[in-house]
Image (cartoon, rainbow, N blue to C red; front, side):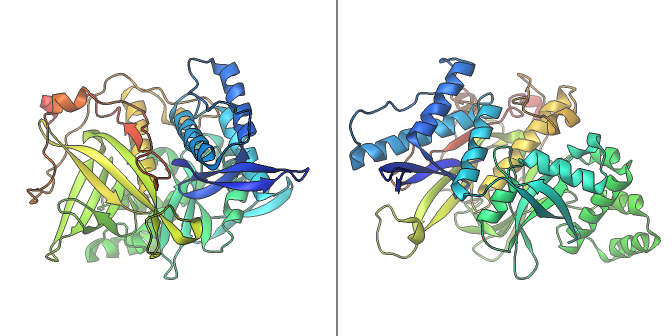
Length: 472
């Protein structure tokens, strides 16, 4: 998740006195509005629980009223603080941090705690209505959906709730996976538009786990409807002969056989993103990105209209980062802009091992950049748990247990051939050994411009560390 504090507001307190509120955004969307004193209280709680050595630096109190320049300085400092806490595997996963964000979200939207009905969409378009509290967190809502569907407890962790936007043509844009620090009812209500929905979908990548799900009647039906939906949307490629076989299995009601055939098809289990822009193999190329099978797949349209396809294996990504900035919308100024005149520009960049001793940055400009980053991280987490002999059920269904343990070194798999880059002007590639010596896992850098609403959100890839010469 991408945390930022792009703006402040002057609000009136209960006694009428003004105060400065800091607007915390997640993925470029307002999550909550908080005072400095609230964040200071959170900081003191975290410091008491985890110790001063673990907690990042917090901007100091001021005796006198802040000047506009001091307010801006504090905004930047608080933004870095929130990013650092979220990036820390221990603090960012703590119930203390997440409950603070949930309460702040509910208070900001001024939604009282009460019983409500919430619609959850399935892959086939059907809706499941669950009775929840407005203050129920994501895991509580997922439990309610599972209970309504009669999905066993040991299979709940194989599924997640996703925020999606439905286009006029019926196409789905995946915005994000709902997180532990938000309240699904508040999140969907605050968007104030009917084009957004909450969707239930499987949350793992390795099709080997399909067997666990298909052993249960409800799990089988959920997986079957998702496979049918992905085929109908064109996310899974099917030729005429395969289409006839699938139709025959559908008519017979052979759901397991239908899924088994689906598993053999190209892009089974992939998540497809909206068309966007990449700088690989040349700058300004249009691309359709799909995530699945531990890779990002590119369908690139070159400037000469030629189409190319290539795959970037997650095990060959040394690290990646998400960058967001506010871009003026035709207002003829370079000054920091108001939210009404700006749009958020998101980029995902990853450093990829093209060949032995050759690392190269690849950038994707997309409003779904953070969702892509979430996909990459979940692939890495799944690989690490599997390679260390751990349980994916425990990984997927952890309740406030902190971060996933990642072994110090793991073996990675080989990658298929990639597109060759014809652009001689791309940045020079330095030796791999030099690059590896400078990596900072889970680090965070400072904001890079006045218009930047957050710093670079770096993710070091633990699955990359085990790659050796024999793997290339």
